[in-house]
Image (cartoon, rainbow, N blue to C red; front, side):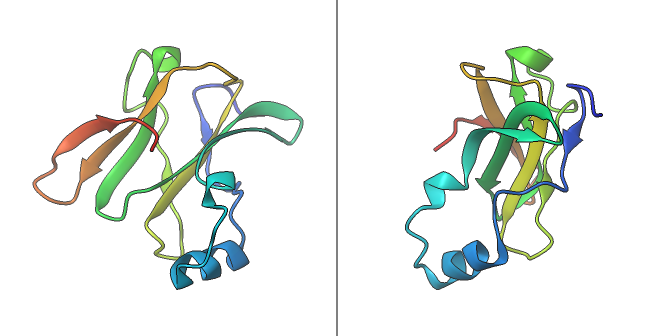
Length: 116
C-alpha cells in the first residue's frame, strides 16, 4: 500500500477510447476524466488527478496536504503523447485545497494553476 506521500501513476480514469475521442475533438464528457475525482484504488480511498499540460516539463499537485511542496506529489505524463498528466494520491479527500504546479519546457517557467 502506498502512503499519502506517494503518487500512483499506473492508475487512470482515461481509456484508449477516451483518448481517441479526445484527439478527434469529440469527447463531450472530459470533465468525468480530467480534474480531481474521488476514487478507490486497491481498497485505498484517495483522489485521481488528471490535467492537460502539453507544454509542461513537469507537473505536480500541491496544497495544504503537502505544504505546497511541488516535489512531494509529482504526476506522470501519459505514455500516449496526449499531453495529459495524471496520478492518484492516497487518503486525499473531498474539500482538499490544491493546485497544479507546472514547470514549462519554455525557459523552465513555473506556476501554480487552479483546476480549470
